Amino acid sequence: MEIIGILGAGAMGSGIAQVAASCGHEVVVCDNLTPALSKAGKRIQATLKTLVEKGKMTDGDAYSLFSRIRFTDHTSDFRDCTLVIEAIVEDIEQKQIAFKSIEAIVGPETIIASNTSSLSVSAMGAQMQHPERIMGIHFFNPAPLMRLVEIIPALQTEARFVEKARKLINCWGKTTVIAKDTPGFIVNRVARPYYGEALRMLDEGIADAATIDWAMRDLGGFRMGPFELMDFIGNDINYTVTETVFTSFYYDPRYKPSFTQKRLVDAHYFGQKTGRGFYDYREGAVKPEPTKDQALGKQILTRILCMLINEAADALYLRIATRDDIDLAMTQGVNYPKGLLAWADDLGIENIVSQLDWLHAEYCDDRYRCCRLLRIMAREKRTFY
Ligand SMILES: NC(=O)c1ccc[n+]([C@@H]2O[C@H](COP(=O)([O-])OP(=O)(O)OC[C@H]3O[C@@H](n4cnc5c(N)ncnc54)[C@H](O)[C@@H]3O)[C@@H](O)[C@H]2O)c1
Image (tube, rainbow, N blue to C red; front, side):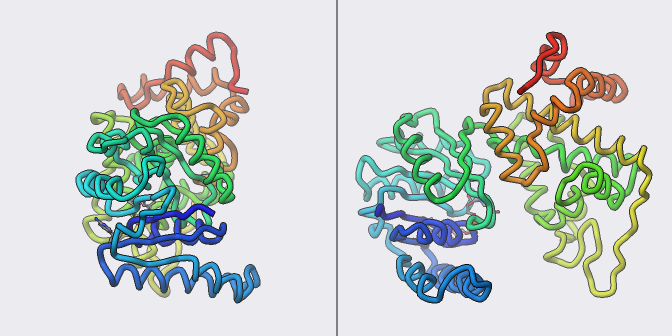
C-alpha cells in the first residue's frame, strides 16, 4: 500500500488522514505544533469510538486503523510518501514555503496536493522545481462523511498525475470531479446564489428568513434552507468564502456579499456554534414560523433556482468543469436534490432566460445578466441532457 502524507493536523488534515487510513494506507500526519498533533489523534480516536459504538466498525478494526497513522513534527518523515496532501492555513505564502520543503524531501513521482478551498493552485506550483505533479485535491468538511472531492490540475500539472490521483481517491470511496483552477472551483462558486439571492430577498423585505428557508426546503426539496445552512456552516466561514470569491472575480456583482451577513459576523453571531445567527439557538428560544404562502414560496424558489442554474451554466460555458461533473458536484458536495443542469431542462431553459431577463431589466443590475449559453440554448431549443 502506498504511504500517504498529510501536512497540517487540523479539522481537514485529521479527517483526510482518517479516510486514507480506513482504506488501508499508512499515513504520516505532520504539523508544526505538537498540541495540534495530539488534538488530531484525540479527534480521530473519538470519531472511531463513535463508529464502534454505532456498530459500524469493530474495536479491532478501529485499533488497526489508528495504528496506521503516525504523527510527527518532521516533514522529513514524508520521504516514502507517494502522495502528500497539504491542509495548513489558507495562506498562499505559507503554502508555497511548505511545498518547497516537501519537494526537497519526496521523490519526483510523488504527487503534492493542496486542500485549498480558494487559492490558486498554479500560484502554489510557481515556486516549485517540479510543478508538473502539483494539484488541488479539495475535500469537504467533514472529510470522512462528505463524498465529493474536487481535483484541480494547475496550469503546470501533467495529465498522468491527475489520472493517478483520481484513481486513488476514487478507491477511497469518494466521487471525484475535475475543476479548472479558478476561484471557488465548482461547488464554492456555483452555490453562491443559494446564499446571496436569499440574503438579497431578505434585505428587500420580500420574505423573512423562516419563509425563505421553508420555500427552499419544502417546495424546492433542499435539505436545509439558506439561512439554516449559513448558521450551520458558520456565518464567519460562509461570509469569508463569499468575500473571497467576490474579490477573486474582480468584484463581479453576482457574488457581492451582504451587509446583513457582515453585521452578524461583526457581532459574532456566527450561527449554531455561538448560539445566535439568523436564528436564536439559545435555550428557550422559539423558532419563528414561516408564512406558508404557496405563491410567495414559488417566487422565492424560482428566483434562487434561476440564479443557481445561471451560475452552473456559466461554469459549463467557461469550461470550469463538464456537465456531468457540475451536476455531480452539487448533488454530492452540497446534497442538492437534483443536478442544476438537469433541473434547468425540467424547468425549461426559455423560462429561465425570461426570468433572468426580467430581473435584469427590473433591477438594472449586472448581477442578473443571463449566461450566454442559456440564451443560445433557448434560441436553439436545446437541452442539457
Ligand atoms: N475547514 C473547512 O471546512 C475546510 C473545507 C475544505 C478545505 N479547507 C481548507 O483546508 C485547509 C486546512 O483547513 P482546516 O480547517 O483544517 O484548518 P485548521 O486551522 O483546522 O488546521 C490547520 C493546521 O495546520 C497547521 N499548520 C499551519 N501552518 C503549518 C505549517 N507551515 N506546517 C505544518 N503545519 C502547519 C496548524 O497548526 C493547524 O493544526 C485550508 O487550506 C482550508 O482552506 C477547509
